[in-house]
Picture 1 (cartoon, rainbow, N blue to C red):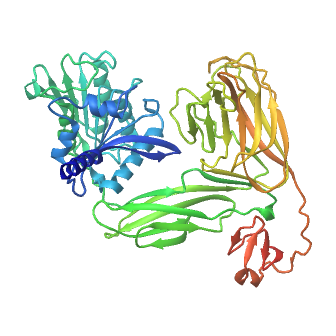
Picture 2 (picture 1 turned 60 degrees about the horizontal axis):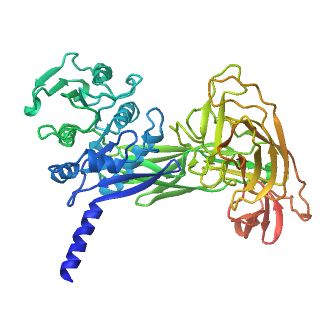
Picture 3 (picture 1 turned 90 degrees about the horizontal axis):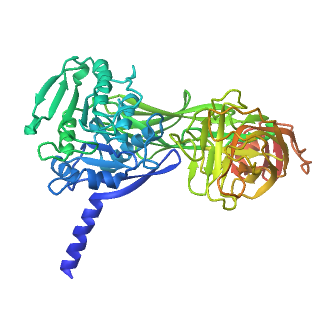
Length: 593
């Protein structure tokens, strides 16, 4: 029994050291593999390494980085650092937008929290398309990554160096016989960064590097701020990770990265709630509009000391101060307009770090729900789609297939951008787009009244013109309160460069009978690959129902002391302490403030 228990314990330790995990980023559930050595210690480094196209984290970790003699885990065990192998969506990476940049940033934050990682020693690399993502990250997050290590990958459209990017250390590893990403493209990509870093234009070359015949190490150094650029040229190697005894890629990456660190001394702050893009849309008479309280949750850590206090602001107005974890505050009394909620951390050296998130309170009479259709390959904030196979929530981007916004370039055309949705298998109500679901950061409230939803919709690739159904649904439960069927008359023809006419604007008028939170839903028909393209959506209130049944409203005093000491409820039955303008029940009597 003792032997069995010991064996189970040892197996458990192994499982815990190398595990799969996940994290929610921009509304998407993202996964990764993480390996942390036993007895890791405090303030240790982190390496994030991204797989190639049509690969995944398991393949990267267990096939590309492992042979009979050595593995990335053994390098970690010796050097005592954590390695993370992330999974891309559809086994691919967003090499032009922010979807996977945000994923990398979220991984860093989680590893700092989970393993007390040193933020000054975070490194990023990737193979093939993962290498392309690494180059993309050089422009996006050079302030978070101490060194970059792309392998067999570079931007196919040509590398660029942002003027805002710092001088960065780069190790690029590439085989001369690579037929997927030709070796000849590596040097032009590196030249951009050699110039940006202020490195010498002539490299120092080491032939037969590490005793590997015809292997060359090219070094452009020194550059600004101690940066350098290296190219490890692997003779006759194709599109794969090199695992030669003289040149094991994992060791080469670590031996390069360990020489570099950032010099971050300011506290790092991250806001976990509310999420970016939080937006409350409240259709109601002005005196009835009531925006909710906003709970703010933040994390803060300091690279070289301790966090002494964390302050929460609405613009310049101090909301709350915390001197210990958890760092939380509540923003109350929000008025119509944009509110910039800022969290400021101060460390023991008096240095500060901050993070902000915008919250938008709107009380419109008319609002475009498609105004955010401005980025091809993305799903905007507030929208959720499902095609029978995959559910997507905005904001998320970098999609090359499935439900997403398409930029249309044909001329003439009815609109410039459209949200494409589809029903892959034709199952009942399994192709849709919805605005305002609870898994988004947008909440749509409507008071009783008469409304109009104007829209323009085409088919994308269905010349037989299957119908589309528009629905007004309860946000919670999905109960339909109004619906309209519409059959498009224009088919775009499956190409963004096709010309197509301007669809006639349609109008869907409906009544709301009770104050509640709602979602706008558009369904394809129930046939295989039924689709549609949504070009313009506008929600307008035509009139509000007259309030009836309240005959004993006291309007004599808008600063009634009873508000301060009485039991106060709003007209949705929610208890409140400091009411804003609106109708309220106070100690059983009705008042308007």
